[in-house]
Length: 256
Image 1: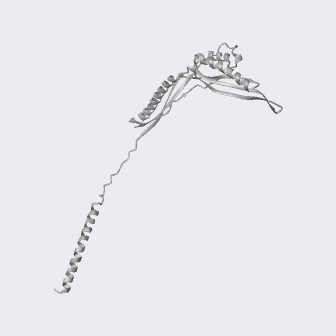
Image 2: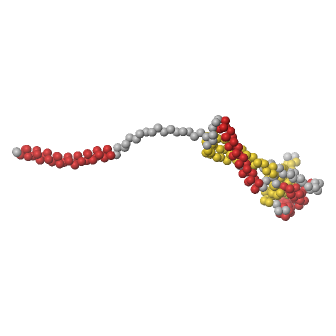
Image 3: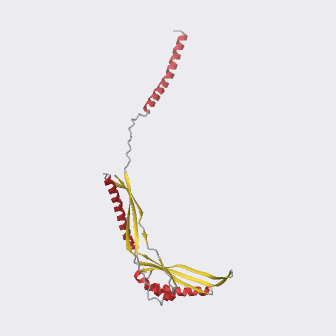
């Protein structure tokens, strides 16, 4: 073998040894690529079924007697000076409040105190003529006792009775609200059953409940214009309560 043949043989072995690691890399890379190729999943068709529902609203109402009276009355005094009318209003108000406390009225509180100037107008000229002071209180008591107490309050110094409104007791209102809710729920169920029955369908389950209202509607207050001078002319003030409405509305969504 000549020198050139020996050189070519050595060069061939050199390049063969150099390419062997690269072959390993290429093969390994190819295996990795095959290993991480995501499989093709078969797509299944999805069928959505809409839920069939009917929505109905029921109404319930209860009427309960108003056994309590909410009263607003007070003292109004006029005079020449502010100090004079304020002192007189305070004195009369104290007597009225003492009477009300002795009669064990409920929720007694002061609702307004005012002191205002009084003007007269002559030939487009304004002139101060005096002052007016008021002191107003409110309280609650049994309706059957309200008439006599109003007369006693006027005799004690009250010069105005602004209004009398009638309400039921808290316990009676709470019981009526529960009953009105029952009636509203039953009314909604009956409506749904009637409609579905006509269509030859059957209710399955209630999927939604909404209580829209469970409040009360008290009778409007009765304005009274009663002055101290009337106390001797009328033996007793008749006070007669009425009824209070308690309403409730329930909305049901029913699947069928």
